[in-house]
Length: 85
Image (cartoon, rainbow, N blue to C red; front, side, top):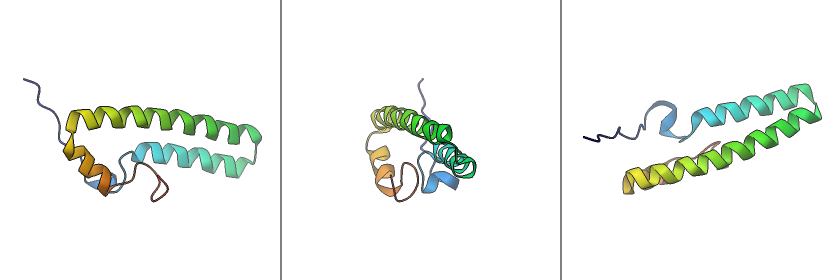
């Protein structure tokens, strides 16, 4: 038996599909702003690119697994920072 878990739409997942990624990127952005260092800005760029790739891969798997249910969730939520993504 291959029972799948439901799509969680409560708490932070109500508006964001990837709230943990949003938080991590926010921490990197905050570190960059507070430190004012070039390497902090470069780290933010690298981590953003890595998470963007990971997010796209996960979204493809979720769309394949949940089909129309996930498509509806995507229409009702943001991937990351609302309403930027």
